[in-house]
Length: 358
Image (tube, rainbow, N blue to C red; front, top):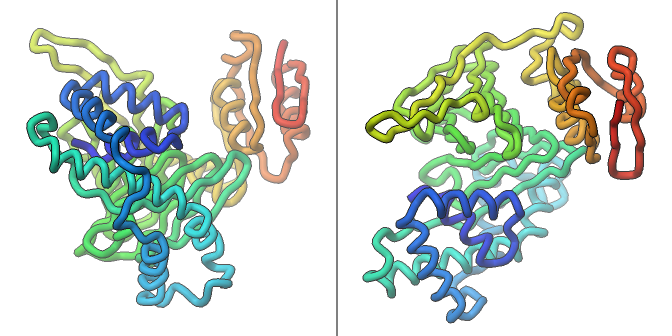
């Protein structure tokens, strides 16, 4: 059973799952009857067990994280600005970590005490560290193995408390730029909604937002393997290539055997912006928002994340207008004025939203 199933269930049991996560969990329940049966039994058990996990020590988990940083020479002091973002997340999320640990404890108890009802026990899950960036903000963190990750706006990254001890795995929703420290004995794996990215030491960018049907991985240096969740193929990328997968363009055609036929993902060269002379796929790490031959709806979605406001287009025809351009230091108001030069429209701005109409 995929670990993602149990992680989402843990968040639901503790009441801190987002609306998108609840929808994703519901989809898993509809797709997997065995999992649905297990969840029903676990939820019943959960209601009868006290909330506080007896064996969990959040301080110890935090101390182990700092110790690993010390071992690789990447930690200076609790006040070090180099790791202040990561440390702040550990302090502020200890209650959330305890909550997830509680849910995991219940899952493990359920596997022990309900063997007749639960046919497949979940694999043990370590305490999870979660780092998030809000829309309109970015962040840079250093992982326990010394790898550096830049997080774009509206991104969530999580990894187990024992990251780097036996394996290096993270789960990503959003966009991140990775500079991975080489370790051939412990491959670095990024899990996304549709596929996994496997490397040993390299530089690459992954974009996989939950609400965006298209996801892609762009390779800057080294090599990566892309392993689709529902396909047998492994896609290998060379530097300056990108892997692109679009759920919205996937054919779901049931053949006589009942299997699903999908359109193959694409492996194509990365795009260089003519004026900036920089790759489009990684422009965001230099504070450039680039769009090339995209619909206004797609651009509005990117701008919502970039500026941290809700942007809505009221007219369907206007939302499908094709535009190209880029922003660097422009304010939201300036960016909207630039777009109006090529496509006339009206807009009404409030503190946290923009409504665009013909």
